[in-house]
Image (tube, rainbow, N blue to C red):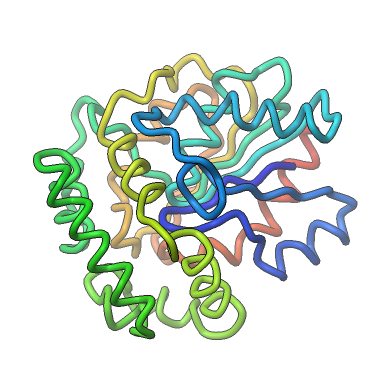
Length: 262
């Protein structure tokens, strides 16, 4: 099973996810997308490009078939794998993924926290300013700033509570490993999300689980509603009480769902 990390983050796995995978007999793999950590940058990459990376990882481990899941910025990438590798990807799950920028009928920014509105807006209209803004955010967090305080417009109470314990510590370490040396992966993710994804959600033919929280300020509920209506054959869980980060605690349920379909 191959996990696609969020934005910004790295491929290190959260310990409760690893323990759950071991208990279920799952070999769970994470990897750094291009530009994160020690992974070579792929400037101008699209969301679809991750399918070739995942296929190469599966080849390296000798996996003919596998499942995948992604959370937050990893969600669209997991959907790309489902769409483009149907002969190898048995099932996929996407938790709190953004919808495509060009999604017809969707107000992309409605309900989104101010800091993500600014981040995506800069990626769309001024790439140089977008890079500089990410560098400022990176420096702020690298300097020890509390995430919930630094990104207050994106963290509702349910997510602030979810960060207590292993998740918060893992987020800090994942951020350090993923973008400690460069914001390239973060920047390239933002640009990819706001560009054509180069695959069609309606053409997905493998089972997909989609999960979206109503309290999410990073990826608004409207994105989840739109995706629930446009991913072919999706099982969509639209939960008004969930946030964005709370969905990290749902990964054991995701593992169980995927194993049943492998």
